[in-house]
Length: 298
Image (tube, rainbow, N blue to C red):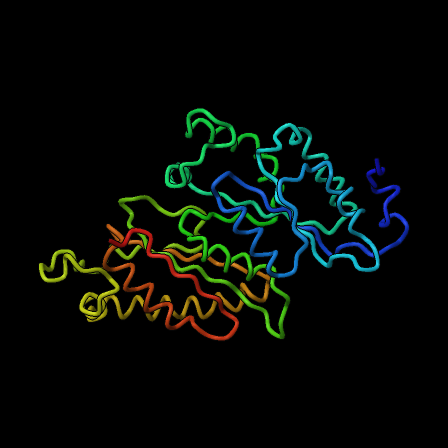
């Protein structure tokens, strides 16, 4: 049987070039790790799923050499729970040797439960779903605390998550890029997690109380026309557009690659979707990747 190389005996120890960076993709089961791993695989990352943390150094040593992969992505999750003990120390040691980044994918518990029920797949920890998710959060807490990026996927479709992760790690072009997620929602259903900027638009006149508009939503032009006829809306849009025009370049300058902006009304069906659509038109420009989510629209 061939001897498994390690950091002392592998090519990396003899001065052969290794990966320029190692990306660890981890997070809660059902949060989208497979989607994220496939996204970076399309960016020519060398990808390995379900690898114990203790074997990362050995993997890097094995793939190092004259034709070493430029970037490596490794999926880690609760399936290897016996290898998660002492992970703080392991990650600290790895960071001394490697240019490593950890992205942790999270989601609201009720969203994870819904995803498992839709796919009819059991949770890796088995038993009651909610209890399993709670236990998984505890087991992965050290990885979350060490993460360089934490992404809440509750409001993201697989396509949107794939696009977002790709924007993080695609080769740098001539100009910096920022991915902006615009989310409309209803306060009655709760506030999205990890929103960077949040605007409450419940002060605007509500189309719900106009009988001809009640059954429509903010994507309908009649609702949009009603919302933007209001003096308050016009003033609000001027101030918000000015604020975003001021903030976005500064976020990009500081190396921020992702910004999440939420707009909430009562039910998330009329005012906030109309405003998000209008804001998006102003933000669409070179260097900006937009993702639009109408979480509670019916």
